[in-house]
Image 1: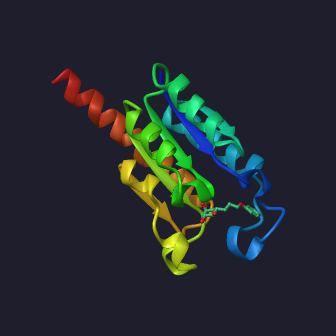
Image 2: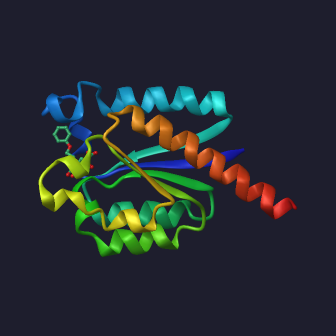
Image 3: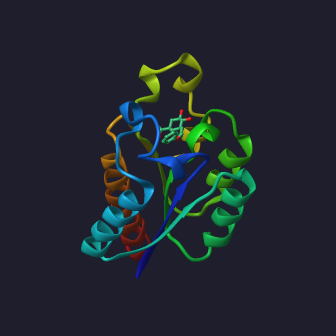
Length: 152
Ligand code: CA2
């Protein structure tokens, strides 16, 4: 069965509890529940993790490299700063799709650049928490296409 790692970075555990005008009112548990339901429809197994610690995110990417075929990741503010996470995403053997709940291009200039986005096959930004489902669908299609190529 196809397996996808869903990673959320620093402060995303507070989703729905602060700054609803930016990030909406759904909690991370709500988001993960919705994603698990969509994953079941797509026939995909999910592992959902959130951490405030950069090293933990790196460890999870490394740990899942031999198990999951793709990744959906919202690196939070680490998107704008972390070369370590960029490298870890690049090292992941399957497709990685990055998500931002808010539109990083319509906010402060320091958020407009996602360093980690360079390691993603695509970036969904500004579509609220629905962006996670779109990213899951995209990563699932990319995995299927890669598997198809390997078979051909
Ligand atoms: O829009 C996004 O998803 C972000 O990745 C969220 C990050 C921010 O630093 C990025 O620039 C864009 C912030 C996560 C903070 O999460 C909170 C969630 C709810 C309440 C307060 C903070």
